[in-house]
Amino acid sequence: MQIVLAERTEHSVELLCELMSVTSSSYYRWIQTDHQGIRSIEDQQLKEKIKAIHEGSRKIYGSPRIEKSLRKAGVKTSKKRVLRLMKEQGLKGCYNERKRP
Image 1 (cartoon, helix red, strand yellow):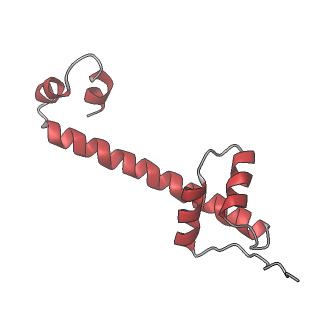
Image 2: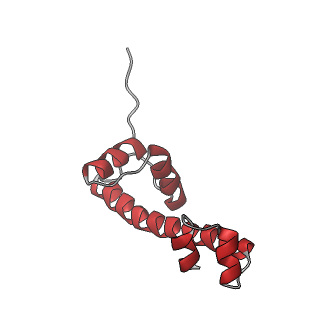
């Protein structure tokens, strides 16, 4: 499958799969499962970083501040992804309601 992935720019996927005695549908399935695995590994690493930042802020920071902290640390991500991973871990930010006269 790695050979098909490397050579797909030069030749058609169908031809490469036929030469490797593999169906093209199994190749595309392999591509999808491989990328989902990479994403889940990245999510797990990001969850650890999010939890560390959240606990370091005395459990006050929410997703916007955590996302900014991650960007300062050199991690590129989005607020929505941080929010999703925080929800999966049950983490919430704390806020004070402003007193209005």
